[in-house]
Image 1 (cartoon, one colour):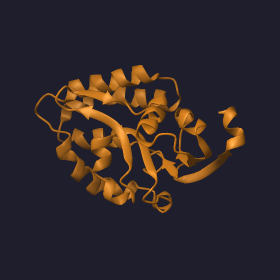
Image 2 (cartoon, rainbow, N blue to C red):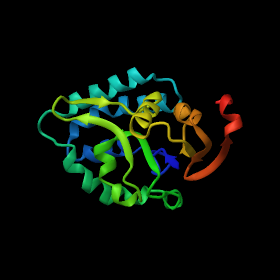
Image 3 (cartoon, helix red, strand yellow):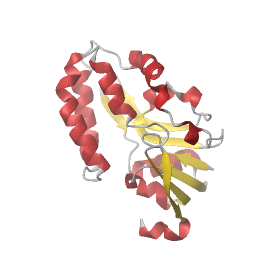
Image 4 (spheres, rainbow, N blue to C red):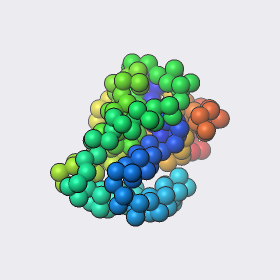
Length: 196
């Protein structure tokens, strides 16, 4: 079984950030939050922001934006109509129906592109729109927790990711492929996992 990260692995870029920018033209108030989003993304990529801190930033953003005048769900289909070209076709070809996609991106956004994924096993962060909060932040060791909840002790033969933020998933995978700019640039085997 293969497991794939989504952002910067299957999707070229950060889909959640692209989605926020996409919504700006309909919800100008998001512009006020753009600097904090970009700063937080940089911290996330450099492994400088902890999971609780990143979750707090996301929840602050949701509370700020979800003021009753906009429904995120209404933007998913038009977003993918203009952004599906950013899916990495070479990585998509590697996905089989029994494989899993696991991401920190929200499930509501990933569900909007599930038809292109070749698998219905897609696990993302969960957002409760009523309370304007992330109820499950599928990031860091939470990915392993959710994977074990859903799939038990099933072995991961190969894991594809762009980031060492996924070190916990790497530890439970026999092989790891690091993807950068749409290309596989590094192959880590089980004997090297302890170095991660």
